[in-house]
Length: 163
Image (cartoon, rainbow, N blue to C red):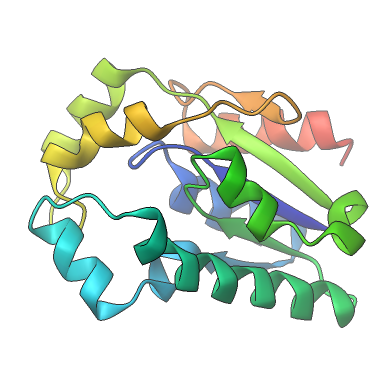
């Protein structure tokens, strides 16, 4: 099984994902680690990525997901996956029954406050509006409100996953 944690920037995907993977003894992958240098530079300059900018990144993540599941490994992947079309790329059809989407549903004011506190992250605060504009909320996901502590969020995720 693979848990795909999605949501806008600063919703807690990395922190919650690391904690969830640690508690379950699974691998953790952070989608941010797989962005190209050019994409990171664009985001650092406050330039929103286009779908064509994201496609190689999404394809790389899909290949990682497929490899993990083909080997019978379990893991947690943190990835914004803001649009339905992105999630369709990320979730290979043959593995859709082994991937659980978890949506960290956050409000704009909460995320804006978190971004003001962030230090040394490549995501420019000016991109927050574009993140919320691009967001297409999933209808087939476990939904978690990020106003809790990471441990509380992980407990809620585990409860809904049944482990």
